[in-house]
Length: 133
Image (cartoon, rainbow, N blue to C red; front, side):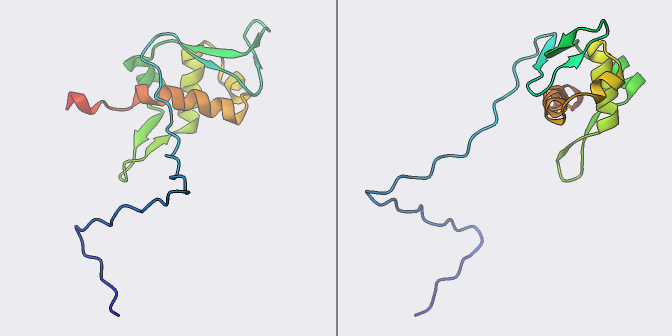
């Protein structure tokens, strides 16, 4: 018997779910970041850090960035040719320090998971908005 070949543009039939079989659960979606409400707060879930006055911080609070921040510290994010968002770690660390009122060495002490949580929460504010094109 000849097996049918696949042609570009044709769609495969939907998989048949047997009566006793559960359909596959949809992939878990990443929740959208909350609206632009300033200051942006990010909880430190893995390790607190010491603030400027010696207090222990369980949350970072970031003020709204400006074009001047990008001019002073550089843009911490860009989109590469494949369309992937790339976070530039050193620039993001400097930007997080400036926006939180902390020093870069304090940001360096963040648990990597907390650092990434803060960086991913802030990255959207440094990317172009296609609606303006």
